[in-house]
Amino acid sequence: MVKATVALLCKCTSNVKKRRADETPEKFLKQVTHLYLNEKNLTEIGPEISLCRNLTVLYLYGNFLEKIPEMASANQLTHLYLQNNNIQRIENLKNLLRLEKLFLSRNCISMIEGLEGLKSLQELRIDNQRLPPEECLLFDDQSLSSISESLLKLDVSGNRLETLDDLGILSSLTYLCASNNRIADINELASTLKKLTHLRELEVVGNPVMTANRARENLIVSTTSLEILDGKEVSTLTRGFLEKWYQHKGKLFGSYDQPTSKSEPSTILGPETTFKEPSAETISLKKIPEGDLNTGQGELVKQDGESKRKVLKGGKIHQNDASSEWEYEKIPHPTTEAFGPSGYGESGL
Image 1 (cartoon, helix red, strand yellow):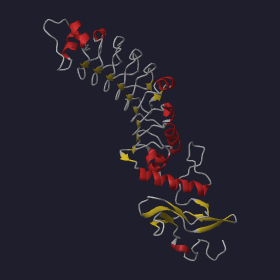
Image 2: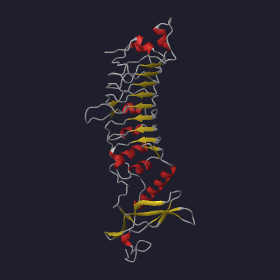
Image 3: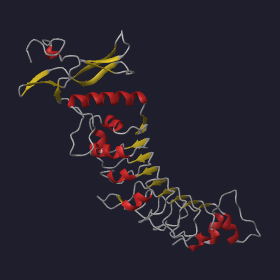
Image 4: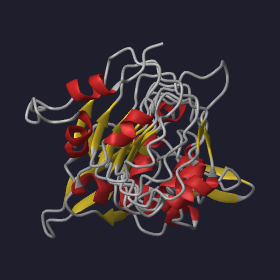
């Protein structure tokens, strides 16, 4: 067992602040604002820490601590670094009313709890917890509610999470990292993102959901604030095009609303999706780069006595010389050359 003694505390201050020969340890520690106790093989932090009454930043990462130390007198603390320890529970934080950053990565914590009263908390990192097999990180609703207005950044990556639904209450989030989990439902994820109206950066790489067809596009249109997705910028041009294209899809289906739950049908168009023939042959799309549009139309099929168009690849975007607007043009499938310009041909369908 290695314990933090008064002598050790005096040695682990910044290079700027050093104890004078005629200065008592108590007087010296009372003035300390930064304490560097990281990677000291510590197993326990005793009451000696209470001597540091003006402590604002405390580094305790890389030790063997099994619990968060009691720091009732450290009410000036704003940054607490506890990653890479053996901590099993979030506790002893209720008096840290000014705490802004809490780092708990790579511990043994099974639930986000004990955050009541941390009204100033802006950043929480609790990724890659060492949990028993098949267990995932859990969330206490009361704790999440208490930090919902202040928390700006959250990292819960590598915790076997299957859903982020509990995080929808964190309305002030601007950054969320949930990579390398087990999230698979794109509709549920999109529904959560709609609630995070201030979210600017999202990381979900390494989840099954990102292997789905057009997953990135669906996540972009599910929130209006997202600027970076998995490290790649979401440009205004890209968002504008996707929103117009999804709007067109919605019109073809009779609705523009994106899926928000498992029970609602997805608007993702696959290669065999069918939809009713739209009245217009083109739709104007301003400021879209010229090139092929990898989406479907073309062949007409008859189903239950009603004409429908089978989705096949082959659309193209081009610029109208007269109007200078970008237009989406339907190109018939090669097997339907008999159809006329309208797509109905002479068959009377």
